[in-house]
Image 1: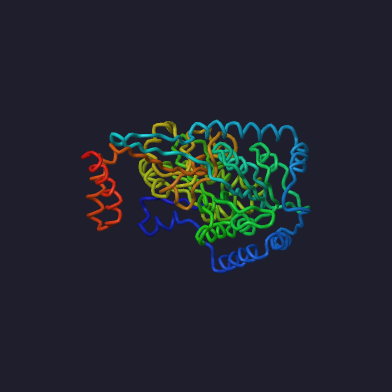
Image 2: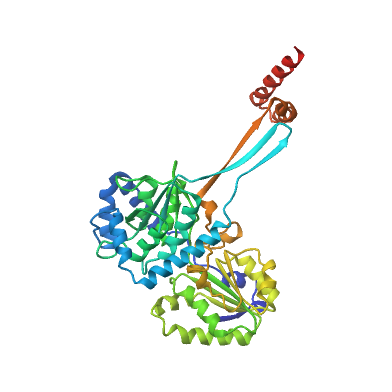
Length: 437
């Protein structure tokens, strides 16, 4: 890994040092996705079967997984894995339940009551990847908040294994969240099915979940089409930034960097430290640890574009991190809690030497579907509110209309919207006439 000294870099070099690999799809992916979306929209289930055979090399006996087959797959799992899924779900549920948004009512003027009411999204679609590895954790991260939100219908799509079946661990996670509508279809075609609907897969109001460039581009295209579904967020390559002081353990820091580097060749890992000695020690540990990783080749490709950066001090490290707005931020600091108030841009923050990012990926309780590519500047990760809509409700009594109506009359006059104005003045006139009699 390259070790850079921040104070020796000019602005152009600094931007280049932290430049992310683009998450934008190239022309080939954009055109390919558009073709897949059209094929599914026109061909329905038949197109899904054909595309699944082409891209996944599998022909499922049926697109929808029967509940009995789901339950049998769950029963086939090792008890330890089944228990871990239930344990993780319990913590995710406990954390997210505490943050469920509530409605409220305010009397904004005598006789005028405004309310905010919360409703679940009617039908949501969850995409759970299973490319180089199945991700039951993602099923939990999406399924638990959907369950807490009270979504009446939850659809889950996941790519099939070579034998045409869904991964049993993903099915177990779905069962843990009460999801019965599970379909063995992946990639852009799964996004198309959940966006438009087919004979088997129902059209959804909002789509959730990470995926490769094709899945991400498919989500973008369907969400911008007229009448298309909403999406949680574009999902770019995974990333972690570690801020470490001289007292950090190089072995732990290197392990944290590698935990993200193994996600994919376009993942980015960054270390910011005020200690040149630590930077060198971490570089040595990374080189040593990567050799024993089963996904070493993937990790090496990610490391080629990642950085170890020596800053003048920890204040500068925090400043750089806030500008970068990482998906995951680890504060490997002796007084990590004291720095939290200084952090204002990050998807999820991990404090101290004993809080690896892996905990957030699986079982601490927070969500691992997080903003990437700097999107932490303006949004946070998935939570229960992402599966809900908030409506406002208001009611004015005659007294309330008399109190606030003149304000509306003045403002609508300023905007020259006289029909708006008369919707108020006609009522005010009627009230005055009634009072006069």
